[in-house]
Length: 228
Length: 228
DNA sequence: GCAAATAATTGATTAAAATCAATTATCTTT
DNA sequence: AAAGATAATTGATTTTAATCAATTATTTGC
Image (cartoon, rainbow over all chains, first blue to last red):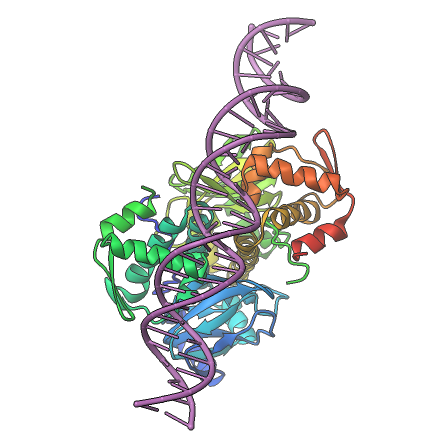
């Protein structure tokens, strides 16, 4: 499993819209809604009616699963990612997960039935959606494995590498989420999250300066991710 | 999250093949391989070349993710389920997970590129595959949540309810997998698995007679699953 | 059917991380 | 800028389940 640090990102660079015809794009455009969310706002709630497929144009969001007590961040969705794709599943018109904006975000909402119709009529488009779903599954599986079998250091290394490689695409980035959010990503308590971060800092694997986090020793993090 | 006991099954009753034309079915049939696996044998290995999509005709299997040290059972695949669908994902010709036969099993193997071709040419078929992928994702997400946020009793309740409701479809079934396999399903050690099972037995939620397991108090298990 | 091997069980100990409790830092609002 | 609120940090304690070690059942191969 080298190089497989269980990224929680949904990197849908694959642009499915390219497969649509002029007409189909127009249909989508005519029926789309554009909505702005502020940092911290809910984009959708688990259990609510899923009337639309949500496409994140700008910003950053998390998709999470919750019950009364606990919350688990399933994935981080960057610009270009979809939210609510699992509700495409027939006879399933409710959101299976919640989503929240990590940053101020802009989304486009496409009518669910229209989206389904496009899938049923345009195989190339459907094929792209399949790609997205598959890639997404692979990432969640690896993340699942990470949280299940690695302990605090490995989990933290995985998440930091993911954020760096997949989300921000630079070794130095503004970690503008709270420690609690980071804890939800690692599946640790916020206290344990803080202690683990501190340990990485003391070992000079990372630097933290205010909200800015810099990975200074990626190889060590990779080692920790792969156990060591 | 009522009624959502994080089932690990892939219940693809949705039969995607119905959407294929005579010609397409013939194409698939002409290029299929049929292979038999004995209990315990590997059906596919993570990292190996994924030349075929695997369809489980008979038997029962698990899909799991592994590294050198640990293994995590992602899902139980009953008759009618697919293995290796995530490898449909373009430019990804390796199996992302391993699969092993829980029981003697028969599979059909469909050429990956042919399968991709059918998806690209038959939108209704593609749509069914999307359904399967979505349903599968929802189940794995719930399972992920269960293992992440529930403790031993809740996890065990989830798995027993899943096996009963989704896989065997009866409250009394032959649990012909080892305690270690059950441990992999619950994400617990085999010792803890045994202790948890024993506790359920002592509380008269289940009866164990040799390899036969009978759920005698489903409501209590549901309560435990939903925390209590 | 018996021996060896494998699996299941039980108890004792340890370890990892959660929780609890208190303090300090940072952000918000006016 | 001050006050209050929220978030971050640190230390102490507890909890859960893993690990370790030993024993008992059950299979399997001959």
